[in-house]
Image 1 (cartoon, helix red, strand yellow):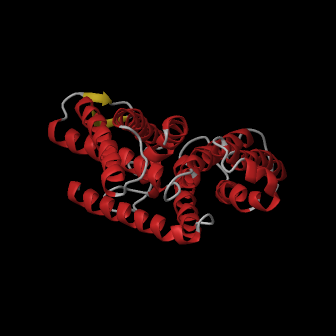
Image 2 (tube, one colour):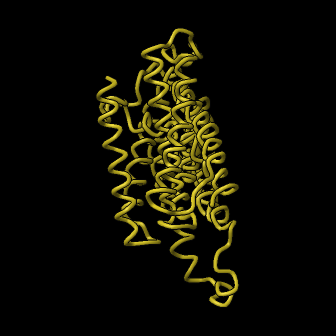
Image 3 (tube, helix red, strand yellow):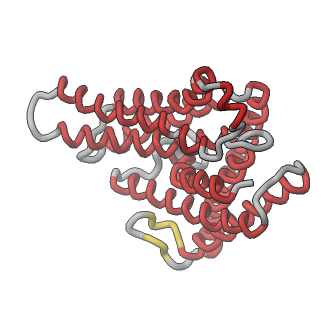
Length: 304
């Protein structure tokens, strides 16, 4: 299992880097990043709908999938439509707004508001008898927010200012999150003795969590070293990189635990069997969904 996870995991990371580098030729449209986001978040949303059908919250599959797809598309709007309507004289005075990444999030947020309102309208049209409508709306909104809104922070990292656009912060996020995942899994398997949170995930251990934290910090430092010495681009300082690894790595492990809670509540081991060694697409994204907003805020604060 560990060997399969490592092979599949490294293959996915290599594929992601290839997509990001290829997309540099089409900046700022990034069509391959768009297709990857559509596939990953769309698949994760359908897996989450199937999971939640085992609970009292039975979300509307069509509304969840359509809402997540709308939010993904909305993430591109400020970068494609915005430049067409901005005053060129203003752009000349302010070549880059440091809060532009925050402003861009208004588009997916407004789209989410529309999805929330639409979910009420859809369920009102389908209403037949009391007792289930509110649970369906609640499950629908939860699924769209969990996958679509949290996923937007990952998507928006692509447009951070700097060399190669947002490849660097994305590389930090993926390296740290998946480094923490792999470290926790490996150390837990080899040396795990004390249960971390058995009610949520009986296999996770304190030793594994500490190993994941150390691996996350190490991955962030390696990413900083590659940026500094091989790519010769501005990057986080050593202390800031270690802090990124600690904060984002810890949040990534928390995200993994939260998805374990969802699966535990739904009496399922994995979201699906789409990704060998990992489970489903949601099982791959769980740590990134929680770590993405933290990485976004950290890079906005301390990024080069």
